[in-house]
Length: 568
Image (cartoon, rainbow, N blue to C red; front, side, top):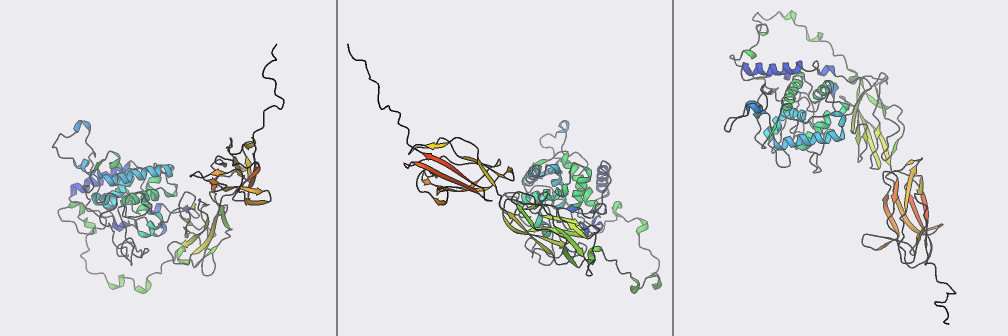
């Protein structure tokens, strides 16, 4: 929220004084306040997200928020002060109540982030504080059983009239506005941020900003980007300010965070308390409220209108100095090599993009956004699909390293200039299947069987690639007719499928985390002889295993000894 939204209205001087004291007390216990100007991104530093801090953009587009502050009283009465039956709940206890489904969403998000980004140390109380400030906990918990709000929660149109100017980015899909964007849902994401930050928090296969589970998880990931550690003052403040770039907003969220940390409890959905004060409330305070009465020095000057000569003529208004971003005319590749990696590996090369003027001059301090596009599970280092990097002195921005997932095939990384309509630059990237170059049996026991019987030992092989374990490598196994004839043999040993039917070719196999592949149990028909089992993997590694089916040796003697001695 920009500074002109920071005016807070309170019902009466007493409430104002209490609120001010709460912020002051909390601020005194923290590090010095951080403002938006205190958190620039250094040249060349990556921010793996889509936030436009250089242009004032944030998760909410700096939309309005609720300014109510928590009461100074403890959120829950102490044991010695427990109210008797029929005693009204204290103001602090009422404010500490969080609707059950909303509270569950916050705690589930904390659990997921603890596993996926343990270094972030996200407390669910921070999500609760932001949820309180952004939407009053989804309007007091007005959600259905799945966590979706019963009606849409929308911020005002960001049309530049007292708000940031953010033109439509979603064709009105989320906010119903095809002209300007609006913040959406219980955590108030603008559509352009939700496009990359959205998450499926309730496992229904949909990323919906109106669902508190999805929104809370998305907010958690948003706050945990950039390797921020929220257990530190610096990390916590940077994360909150990235959500809404206002010191007033920061102090309000910190106040609720401190309040919720002292104790909360669950209340039925739809019964939560609703905030009243908003940062975009421009109404005039009543004369009886001294806290909002302007000081004498701010009263209008009753003197006559100054002479016209004291007003600078319009022609003397200085032309604003163009920012570096304003001078960018094109993006160019800065020596990016071919982007190819095997599934599960990190790409060996990074994307380098140069920002240039129309005359071809390098432009430093320009924010370049890299976005992964296409059907892929590849990410940048840290698990994000969007990274923002500032160009260095030579005008070059180097994206974080790409990490291949398990999905093979081609995808695109698109580079664009943040805050300027310049044609983007696409980079083709490809993920190839995992491969092995060597296969070897792990055992040396000869594989033998009698006709119609079953082999005692199972075939196990180990796959390697360049001497290292080759895990998750696809493989096939088939009985072939001869070393020079890979046609499937219809005689001899065989496998069984789930229905017990004979199978002599297995597909869809894969090595495990240790590069091992253990084939199913083997059986033999009545055909005797030596048979060949050929195992092949992606990448060309091949191993031929020999199996023998033979009748048992005849142990009877040709000249048996007499069964008894001659009689006398």
